[in-house]
Length: 431
Image 1 (cartoon, rainbow, N blue to C red):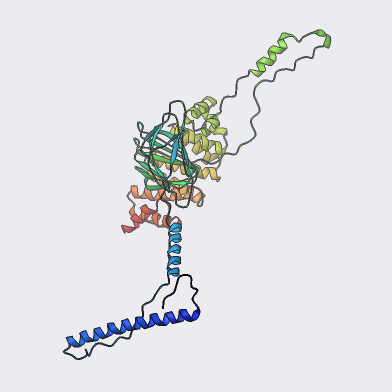
Image 2 (cartoon, rainbow, N blue to C red; image 1 turned 120 degrees about the vertical axis):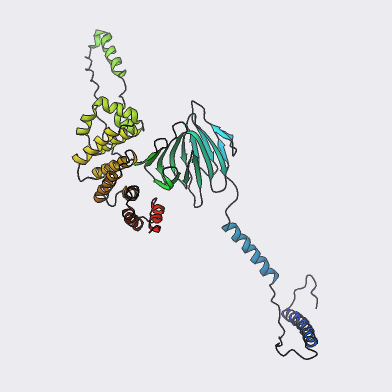
């Protein structure tokens, strides 16, 4: 039976077509079965093979063309959904189109912006040098050769960005930070504003997490690093101005003529009063630690330590530590411990004293004691995870294998995915 184009087949004609197809398929199956029997009989000398059961006719399964087209379309849609776009990010350097692999250098007098098609933006400080090494649909790999850059990375579910800085790798998913590298001094500085990153490289280990509000500094030549956290400082009302108030000018009678020249001179002198110099607090906020310490010493460092608030003592300690004056930092932290005992600031002072003992003096017994003090006073504090991790390192470096394993178990119970988790697991595997 043949259908002519344009015909609209009735149900009876379709049924007849199905019976014809079934008959043809059955005939083909019968011919195949008979040929199979003849082969078996010839192989057995003319008799049917005793161990072979006869198979009934089988009918192949057919997929209608329309169903096949629908299945193919659904598969194509599924692939589009599941497979990420392979289109790489593009970027612009200033007003020019950026090229992967090309060196980018900022001028000596102005920063240079780099903008990516996903919304990520970088800014190279003056004299900084960098290169976009690779870029794909999920992110890019950027090499910072020297200088400082500021980054605001757009976060998506699959975004992955890497920043290579000297011997260090910074893995980023989405965040805001400042990153600098000095190849001469071999010093890294990472200030994290939002989000989180993981840093790997010498001294810091395989994957050290850095969270928002923290600053990581690595001093390769001195074989040490510091991870500090800046707590937000409450802003009080502005201090009253110390500038002298000029006396009010006398009001001259209307008929006395123009005001004397001395009155105009007084007004001019008041308007030209010099601007207030930044305080040591302002300089710490601006990360100008050397200048902050100079201002604090000019104001009288010992007097500041004796009357400063707990928060100011921690700021003084930061300024002293980052300007290379550990003795001054220890004095401010010790004053916070004695003057504000039992407070959160006193606990943070204990943590910082422990970190100074660990990083700068390699005094691991003293460091462990201070970290223990912090955990005793602030078991759920913002530094608790690092303090417990540092206790593992202290005991391991002092040769106390059993003590390090005990601290490792405590750490894994509380922070199974923390930065010290891999080290803790390796210690327990050595049992």
